[in-house]
Length: 599
Ligand code: UGB
Image (cartoon, rainbow, N blue to C red; front, side):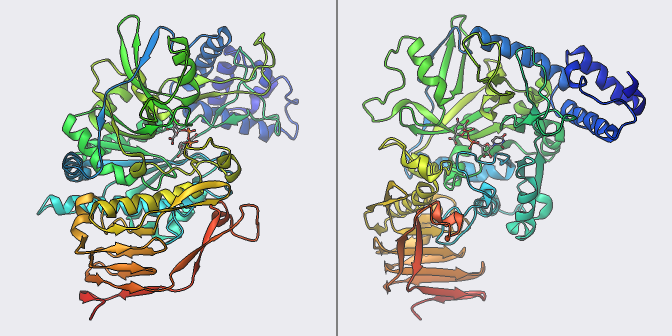
């Protein structure tokens, strides 16, 4: 009681709410007022205020939701009770065919009406990398980090969309990055020290997610921080926070007023995701989807969620991601004793969610106004024993951004688009040791496979455009057997769509297996090139450059490195290889004009 004298009326109100919500234990160890701890007590209420304002409905709602979910968990209630899973039908695209090209064109037209949202608040515990994941090189031929690649891709889309909408000026496409206390300062620093990678600084907005209170028991008593008895212990709430943050930031209204129509969500380390954006956005706009989730064929038990149609006994249906650890038990419990297994295609019949969502802004705003941005949560306590009365360690509520459609009415147009996995998905999530343990045939999701998949995709795209690209060889790096294709990369501004790639290569081109090629200019035209070695082309935007062959040199050699060798920088050794740049042809065009390397 005496402690109240040092508090403001708002803090006293918060204190009363905490007492009413059964949280008196948080104060039981407080010292008498007038002691040295008074400032800590005020800071405690600052923390409570933050926890209260950053959760939809406030801390009292959080505690109530926690009690309900913890009771369900204790009872062993199945979140899918009454639902039967089946394989949903969606748009299946094949790279490079007429349909794909048509959707890409529709997507490029539409992208000027889009905003992009990158969820990058996770530290990537599975990867174990010491820095932020968006600062990792997506590939080491050019060393371009994920964030630079993403920003350059958005800028290239912006420019391509403007070109299509002839006569209209270029509109800056907004980018929001959701960060957390773990990633915010380093993300801002990466942007600022690189001049925002070419974006206007006010085109990029950082929204920081807050952690949520930890729970000590089934009554949702909040956990005292083990380090500071005047703090509540907190943990991350998950990527689902992105919806409430967007809602409370007011950005959705700003975008709506500016005439935008689409919000595209994506994750921190997928070097291929922008290969899928134009066509997927084309699908969203053509089919007028309210929600479009991108998916790829998924190996049974692969650690990515499965897109599933759930039909309730009462007739309700929804198409939703079911996380990989829930899909197998759900199938077994509903008449599929074999669980999640590959079909005769070699893949699970349930497409894999790559957590790239395209939402139609109007219906999205309506829904968030109704829910205040809150989306369904879950809790995953680790119980001490089967009585389920106490936890091994504190737990918390969590939420996932792909659960957004769960609360939508059945009339919402929810669809998904399946892309070739080689085209659209190359995540970097697993550390070398865990990746080496992935069952043979399943993707490693490591820095090694992430980079090699980029070369594979670029090689296959050029092949489809008529270039003779040599077949890959197999090699093992950090205990992972991968296909090694020629190391081909290009800047997003060179080509964002298949039509653009086709317009930039012509004649009789070939690239040998041990070649490296990096195209870093917009108007670079590759004609009758026969490449056996390394070729780097740098050109300013208004230089039109024709690159012709033959180009033969000793090239860049791939050298194996061990991930345990700490003398090598972490971002290199987690791949298990590096380049020995023995020889190369580097072409530099720094002035406007027309050029060819043959003259
Ligand atoms: N993230 C945040 O921004 N905040 C958080 O609190 C947590 C994460 P993970 P996950 O790629 O295929 C997802 O950890 O959650 C960001 C889907 O659920 O890499 O295990 C984080 O920075 C799964 O269905 O992935 O699995 C990162 O950018 C499947 O689709 C993103 O959220 C899988 O991704 C994802 O976090 C996938």
